[in-house]
Image (cartoon, rainbow, N blue to C red):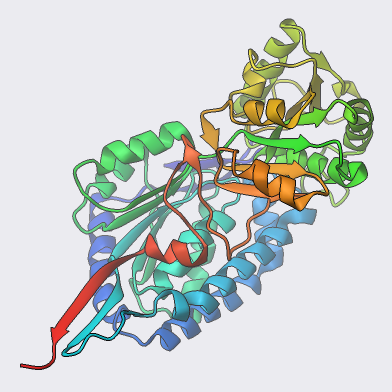
Length: 460
């Protein structure tokens, strides 16, 4: 039995039975059968049905916001933001489908017709995480459906209602039976499903360890496997930065969603000319957060997803302090802060270095370390000193310098004067242990289709 333990009060919020072998077999058969017709529909028909799915989903924004608060702890005041983000990503991917999926016509060659056509891969298994359960799912589900694939969603145990709500929206929209389905699975069942011959591609968002398990499960299957595995995302505040802008946005980038974001800011390098003023500003703004129940509209910082996650982050903080770091936030100022529970106050650490786990190991929580640097070269070296590479941000008023520095940073996305954001028209990707493959943008469609070349001799 699947149990979703709410971080609000430790109660069992949702419980569902795991799928049986018969359930899984039926789901696979339906997906394969539905795909034979779905792929033949005109793109305009698939677009209309996907748009109707989006309409049905956003119509229940209030329900989604409340359920997200109970399932994973995000303050209810921010829940509708994820619904809006889902809509933006979905509608953007729907709009670009015609261009992204168009035939690639080659230069004319007398006596021949030559072109490349993108065809659906078949059945996609999307394995989605709890931290942004709708946004991350949209990255693969919508373009997969637009490309003519069928989708089976395996959602996190922490957010099972998200799978059900998406399926309800698909049913309301009138998607044919079997085109979009979900399964509640344990780890062994998930591995077995990846190995099923009916599965033609996998899209996974989660931890590095989880990604390694997905790769092992898919070994020898020769199917596309997209992996987005998180980050230890750095920021560099140059001496020509707009300091107030950097402070406001980096605090939000570090602590939104209680720091539980794959592209959240986890380490900041500040040029020595700004260091003291930057630290003072960040501390002052962080102390304005309201930690509490996510059901309270006044709450701006909710609980972490579970006590063990908070304990992990606290362990990083304690180790850093023991090694010489200084904590600048007094947790006792936050009335809801309770050690041993998911309710964890935000923390800022200075006097940190890269011998400390908090500066090199993904935290995925409300803590950020700040280091002073003397030059661009020092900052870039520190930013690249990680086995993860999802995003990095530069805070500067010199676009040309930022572009030059960006080319040296080992990351999938380089931001200038913003952070912790996905633009659906840009490829979402990473380097090193952050994973492989792309989602979103036109390139995202390449992960969900296979190229077929047509080479016709027309004069014989």
